[in-house]
Image (cartoon, rainbow, N blue to C red; front, side, top):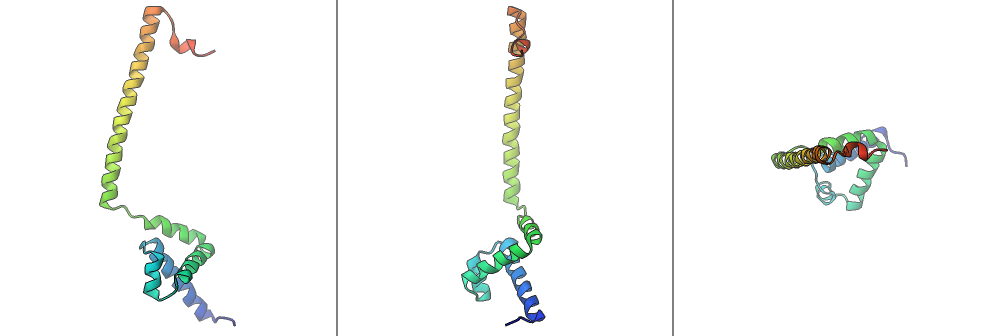
Length: 118
């Protein structure tokens, strides 16, 4: 039996709304199933159908779905602080290495920078 244009449009809008709840609102398929009164498998199929028929829109919705919350911001600040510590430590190592190379050249007359290359 062929669906009318109006029924098809309603189905597309329903799939889009279900996908929006899933991707942007982060509702589980079970929660969406309860909300709409559909079986879990129907929700799963509608989500997969929407992704297959609208890959670009689905990808954009997934990207928008991850909003930065204060906890994310705090975590990023902590990560930045840790990376700054690591950079500082690596700079100290690099400076120490440079000093050792200079010391080796001064004391032993060996240019370690050139000795390693052939």
